[in-house]
Image 1: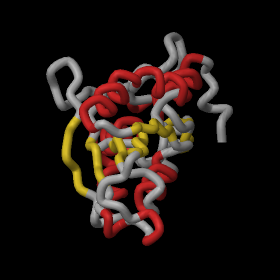
Image 2: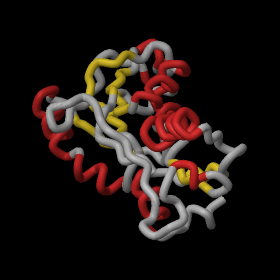
Image 3: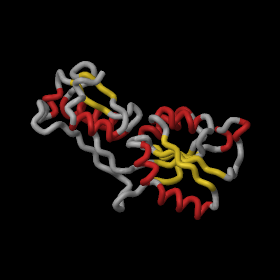
Image 4: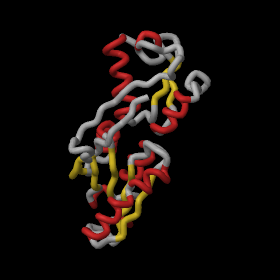
Length: 193
């Protein structure tokens, strides 16, 4: 699993990307989608300061939305069901390819930095102690459109250990970051399909 520190792009859908019925340059309510990388209630709770700030600054109603996965957030942006989305680097690239009129306008900063570090984790006392130990086993990734729990670790395994998914190990997508952490803690990655 990759542990992500927030690096995210916010993207705003231009009026031309919205369906005709939803087109408005200055909606009274902004629907803001958060990265679906953890439990939805935790994400909503942690985003309350952002919501309050946006409501006070913009003088608009702010609705926080957590989609089921990255792909559904991308599609919600594409079809005008949200106005603002908190994308990670890879999900932003995917969203931009499907909805070319969206534009980034901010980057998340945590602990003074717009970057984050990722780590690959394994169960203590389990069979994986080095990257090469992954060969012939299952490896749990998060969402397929996630930078930190799919794209970066997959590239790292290929570059550093010459391990290619589905050739050298079985790829298992587990969803959110917390779901991946639970699966590793419970040693349940091998049992997942």
